[in-house]
Length: 148
Image 1 (cartoon, rainbow, N blue to C red):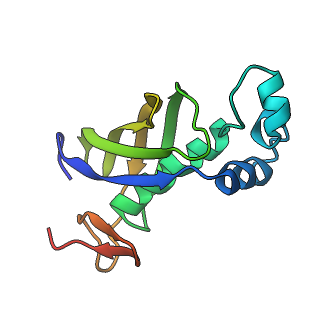
Image 2: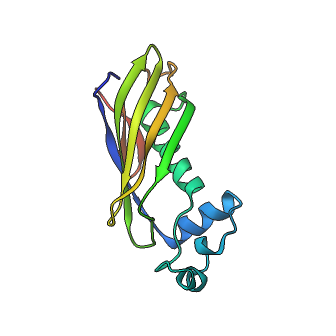
């Protein structure tokens, strides 16, 4: 991967199950992440995704693209428009710096409202059988190695 390379987009359907399970998995029991009635009482139109779920999805996106031996060194993100059920978040990334096997990727995740997440991920790549220096391609059946 070189500076300027663009990672393939990843579309993630934002479901109630994803929002609630992500909040539970990260031990975030704030009512706005699982109780629609209480979320509306606090001014939101529905429950919405928490930052820890978003952080995990950003990490997954980068490691899926760079390969299973990739180690995330730093994830710095900022939330914007909330992810509500029924929407789709599309993650996109661009390589903005490279120093040997350390790559910085600018990540943007958008939904129907606007930018849900923006940030930078620093990752250390490591040769892995079948994936060294190659982008991975997503298919409905799973992640497969691209021929590039």
